[in-house]
Image 1 (tube, one colour):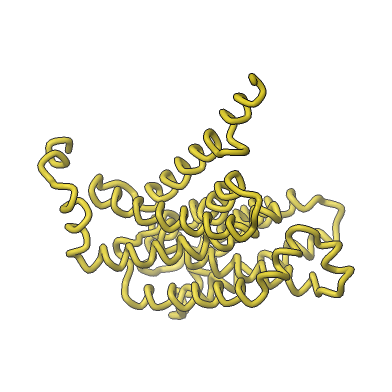
Image 2 (cartoon, one colour):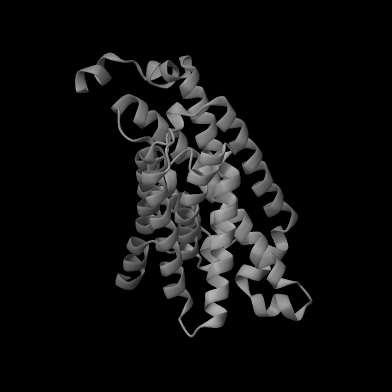
Length: 289
């Protein structure tokens, strides 16, 4: 492997993958989904919805299986089960004394287990590993079109309600006091989360999609106090890590989803260590001085 990299010029490292149709599709879809998830991750980070993102991403699995079995686009089934899991979490939380984090854990593990059972019992051509870990290098043109439509809907939602979402995530009490319908915003944001999780299935799969929904926002949160700059940084870091991850996957023959998430995690660690204001090395330096 080392000899292979030595024999390839830097230009070939970049251009050779672009000569393949499947790589061009993988790069486009991964960058698109990365940008959308990066945008949404800012709100997820401010709202503290990491566990909710994990719940929705796992809860869509039985929807994918049912949709394939019925001959529907997987995105429809995944979205229905994603929103359904959120509604169920809210219902159980309101009707019982169990805390929200416990309810979330119960619901998403239950839905995920249901998906595993359905995969084992329903006869179909569904590849469990494809659902769990994604497969952008093998994405079909029809799935590309679905991902583009889903991503467009998420971006449109986030742009239309951008300021309301920001206020809702920062201070929901103040948002209610000035007449904003926070209940509507709650479910709109959860709908955007469900759609983004569906889009992320194509790139990193159910297991790792939560990383794409959290890591870019957490990274940007360490780098700036401005929400506008945070959004730009989150989108940029997510797109870059998606593209780099796909390239690394191509040349190293490793799992694409894992490669993308590892690059995102590395970028977060760099921000955690060296962020100008909030990096721990900067913090230690200011204490010593």
